[in-house]
Image 1 (tube, rainbow, N blue to C red):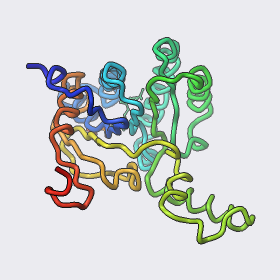
Image 2 (image 1 turned 180 degrees about the vertical axis):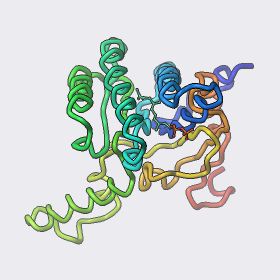
Image 3 (image 1 turned 60 degrees about the vertical axis):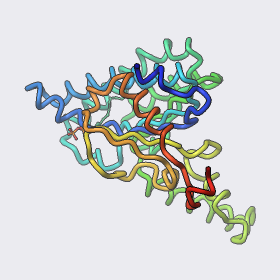
Image 4 (image 1 turned 30 degrees about the vertical axis):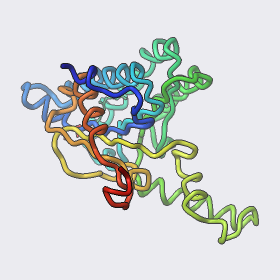
Length: 246
Ligand code: FPP
């Protein structure tokens, strides 16, 4: 039976987050330059997007570029930015036709002008769509997200719009870049690394983690469905006992 056939359509995660890791290693194995791995990774992005649309996932957050990725060799950073603008420019009209909304989270001011402008165009074109929210984490770090939420809350307290007593988990979450979205029920990471790597630190508090040894360019739609099937067979206890959640 295929993973898709095994999936329970009544229990689809509303938010899936992915750390797309292993492009470089995949390219090395193929005897190619790292950028070839990133190019091939775009095919896996397509598979995850298609799989999400087929199952009715509401939010798909992809860790496309971390704050730490700026420390990579300049040529690789430039190639990744170019790939990003080209992919968004090429795919945005097709995504738009499928009612997909492109959004982005992260320190977007740090992106080179052409990358930011290309991204903004895609966001603008698709902003009224009501289907999948394809959320790209770009120049993103979980610590940055928490710090910027704290800063905005402090500013609002200083202006007298909020009092310190108003700050709780809900108000805090509403100042994160993912405000208004459910936390990811499932986080997928490829290439076998057992780390969160400064991704959605607050939002992943109770996410189920699915880690596969497959490298990102090898991760196809069937693998995506397999991850969802695995999620559906976990017992989510949220600190309670097994008996309490049965
Ligand atoms: C991690 O592999 C991957 C990245 C840092 C970039 C991910 C980008 C894409 C898949 C392409 C563009 C995305 C979109 C949304 C169009 P790595 O380079 O860290 O691999 P390694 O750990 O094997 O070196």
